[in-house]
Length: 405
Ligand SMILES: *Cc1c(COP(=O)(O)O)cnc(C)c1O
Image (tube, rainbow, N blue to C red; front, side, top):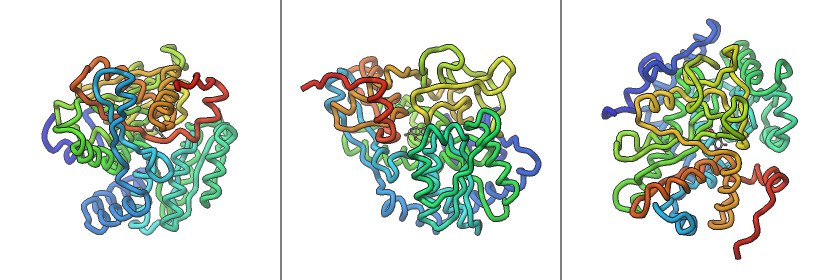
């Protein structure tokens, strides 16, 4: 791993090795190039950095704490487990970190609207929040099936003033929402920008979203030093598209002694369609405008994916994760539904924190890793979000275990 990694990766064209790039239809080339150019201009401007710093502190409530989960540590036995509390970031997850950045960029470009797709609705809610704060219009495309399934998030987006547009063709889920949002963007690219919800999509989004989420890693590094000498031995985060993990990893990527673990959802098992463990079981391929590792069906199309964590069931993954795995800088772990639910209850009952089911994957994996690493070591886990959105589903399907006290 060379010095200055973050400043030199990706290359000019958005490639991390062979992964990344911008494979978009000709009509979208100019709009995406405009975003790349604008981001390059403002990313080092003092006014932009000041504005981001201001909203993070005074609106989002950053920095979110890093705390020593002493009960969880005692329960597992072995390495100390520390948690980065993104559940305490405004809106209850890490996604607002990049949405605020994206909307400031839109404002800088003189746009009056932001457009995005959303799957489970988490990105839609975060973007609608950022748009409300900055006084921009917000248009969210969502599959009709997802609209029915994720009712509370649809209501939230509407309350926040966003327009929710149903994608009514095909399977009526995320892929169709992406198509619908791209189509709408083409027709109004002079007054709107597209805002992607993870470190995925065409260049510059994998880089830009990583940079906005890097606040997680930078804050954690400083805060960890208040607890322990030196650095954590391992950093752990769940990987859907990969933004919360990439944000954490960014703070430690040049510290070769720090192991970086991304945790993928194994869902109900290793058969295609039962999981969303893309880096583990996928192969190289292009979808949604970038080259990465993806899960394909027998026709080479994006395969159906499943996880109990609705924010991590994506058939591709951020290109930088594909690259970092290939060069051996990161390790990829797995956590199935059952382990995630067990960790959901364990963290709730031992530490008084109800984690998002996505984040529970990282916690479950860290609990195993704590035993493997052993005493004298420490693990920093990103708790990417809070579990309020998941409580009804969890208690209806997995009864609350007997109280421990
Ligand atoms: C969306 C979401 C994720 C997955 O997205 P990444 O881009 O992989 O970080 C993880 N946790 C929570 C709470 C989410 O809302």
